[in-house]
Each structure stands twice: as C-alpha cells, then as structure tokens.
Image (cartoon, rainbow, N blue to C red; front, side):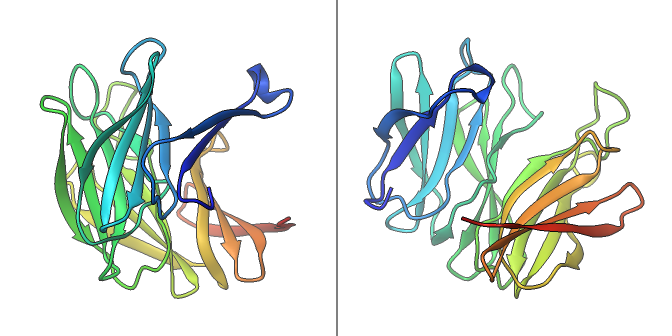
Amino acid sequence: TTGGGLNHWWTGGGASGPGNDGGVFGPSGCQSVPGFVQGDYGAPGNFEVVVAVGGGRLQHVWRDGGGWHNGPLFGSNIAFSGASLVQGDYGSPHPNLECVAVCTDRTMQHYWREESTLVWRTGVSFGAGVSSPPVMIQGQYGMTNELGPHGNFELCVAVGGRVQHWWRANSGDGQWRHSADFGHDVAAVAGLCESSWGMNLEVIVLRTDRQLQHYWRDGAGCVMAARLAARP
C-alpha cells in the first residue's frame, strides 16, 4: 500500500466475481515488490511472502489457517526484493524456499531457507548494475523426466534498458550464468513463466513508455517479441 503495508486480495473460484479485500498484514515499511507463492506446508498449503523492509533487510511472512504471521528478518544491504520467491525441489520432506533480491551495490543476492532448520541462508551474489526487482522461476530445463534431476532456476531482470536472462545449473555445478540480453526501453520485468507452448520461456516487461511488451524464448534459444499492450 502507499503506507508501506501489504494488502491481500482474492477472488472466487475460477477468478470470477469481484475482488475481495483480505486486509492489510505483515510488517510496516515495506519498500519493494513482494514475492508470493503458495507452498506445501499445511493443508491447504501456507501462503509465503518475502518483501524488502526498512534497514535494508528482507522479511518473511506466512499465512496458515490461523492468519498471517511475521517470520524472521534476514539479509543485509537490500535495495529491492522482487517477484522471485519460489519453493523449489531441494529439501525434504518440504522443499526449500528460494529468493533473489537486489543489494545496494546493484548486485543480485540469492537466499534460501534450509528445510531442516527453517533458517535463511545466504547464497552467492551475481550480476551488476541492477536497478529494478528480478523475477525468478524454477523451470524444467536440466530435467530428464518428472523425477529429476533438478530443473534450472530462470531469472530475468532489467539492466540498462534491456532484459538480462540468468540461469542456474541446478542439475550441474549450481552456478549462475548470464546467457542473453534482449529488448529495449525496458523499465522493469513484470512476469516470467515456462509455458505449455513448447515449454518456451515467456516474459512480460514494463517499458519506459508505460506499455507492456511480451517476449518469448523458443526451444532453439531464439528470443522473439510480441505485440504491445496499453498499460492503464
């Protein structure tokens, strides 16, 4: 919200009907885009949120049947959080939570919550010159079948008016790699998914002219642009 809070909204089944205000929750002083997923803790699974707050830190917030709960603060020198929270396929019996944030030196920092201890751990930093929140998913690249091995993390972020694509070789050496730069007049990355269209990566970006641009990467690794959509 404009007051630095988090506001939960929900619709009926099938996304039909009006939006319902689920109320403001979590810490005060939220400062960037929150990451939001439904994990497999509880039945139905808990909602999990990670967001940047004052003091350059990240706050984990979660909701079970009893409502929203503030979890631990973690990280340091954080400039932006992002829609980059996933529950991957590492860890047992519940997979770890994984997120990437942007630090004040404009590098990206990978964090993950260890399932056995529920403690947030600091991974590696990578990238440079980042001035907007990143978006990350775990895809199927690197997997041989539904049992594994681990699919790659795929991340897109705006840098210098273009989109940078990064990926982590989860079934290999676990290192982050910068694979491509594409697009132009990009202000921020809004969304990223691996679609059923040939398992292409699909990216939506916000342009500097306040329009939305769709890009996709096909199986041959070629990046293509699609039509613009007016942003209200």
